[in-house]
Each structure stands twice: as structure tokens, then as C-alpha cells.
Length: 252
Image (cartoon, rainbow, N blue to C red):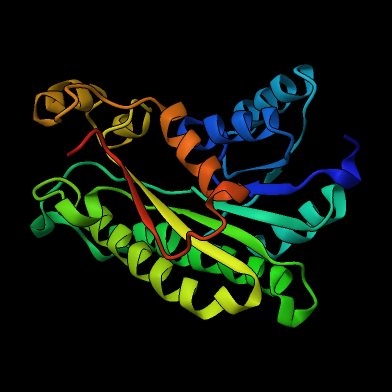
């Protein structure tokens, strides 16, 4: 399959964790993958090398999705290097140190919402502008990475993060209705406690081990398990699915 025959998927925050697992799986299934990263160039380049070594096609582009000009540049560069974007995975997200609301300042809230909410919306906007059949596009698929925190609330730890993911749930539902007639499907996955290094960002690397007893399946999830759900939502197998919020949380 040459480049012109491949569907192009742009994955934000794809240098690690769920994003990296999604990039690897997408490449193995024939997608040309654009790996977006903000700071982790070494990890992003290593992921590209791994995909290319396995016979896939991938590029890495630095951009901070919280910055509008960066988002526009990201889509322009991806299109120039790989071709039109057929699929977008809004995976980029940030988590701050565990804290009750009473000790959170406005700067923290702005950082969390700038990336998790505004970044997702800006990337989706650029995707819709390019994918919409009403604008001359060929349609496409958007998958937003939300979180089980959106329905649990993360009290005493990350109510700001949980609220930002609640916004993603609402955005997914609304956008799916807005662009469904324009050939674009929009869905979300809501991972639970997944074994990635995001927990270290919150100050507790072993958080999944602490909490796993409260999970019906009695374990944390692997990033690859979330990636498989994302790839299903991207695929024609989910062609009649839009506006869905798919929990990948071990039953919690």
C-alpha cells in the first residue's frame, strides 16, 4: 500500500502512553500516522523509528495543542507531509499534582482546561474544516479521549481534570450531532485506571496498584486495550456509531 492509498490519522499527545499505543496499532493496520508531541521529541522520534522499522509510515510534529497557531500549523504540516487527514484522535491531556479544590489556583485550572478542553476543541475544529463534505472534504472520524473521571469526579485529587473530561463528553455529544450530516463521526473513549506514567504527573506513580481493588476486573488496564477501542471507533466496523461514550475502565 503506497502513501496515497493510506488513510492518515493524526494523534495528539502521542509520544507516550495511550497515544503511543494507538499510533503503533494504527500503523500496524495500515494508517499513515502523524505523531504529535509537545516536549518529548526523543520519545516521539523513537516511536517513529519503531513504526518505520516495522514497515509502517509515521512522522512526528511538535505542537502545543493549547496554542491556536500551533494547532493550525500541526494540521498544515501533517497534510503537506502525509496528505489529507482522515482521522483525528484527541489524546493530548495534562494532569496536575493531586489536590483538593480549596488549594487549586486559577493558573492550574487554566493549564488543565487549555490543553484538555480548548486543545481538543481547536484540533476538532481544524479536522472538521478539512473533513466536512460541505466544505469539499471526504468525511472522516474523530475520537476524543475522555476519562472515567468525568462520571466519578475524582474528589480530593483531580476535580479539575474530571471537570475537563466532563466537558469533553458534552463536546463529543454536541459535535457528533453538528457534523454527522457532513460525513464526520465523533465518538469518545473513557479510560479508567490505565498503566501509564500520567499518574506520576499527579504525584503518585503507584496509584493504579492502590486503587485496583475497587475495580471489578481487579487490575489496571493496558494502554493497548484502550488503543484497540480507539481503532474500532476509527474503523468502518463502527460505521453506524457516533456520539458514543465508550467506557474502557474494567467495570468501574
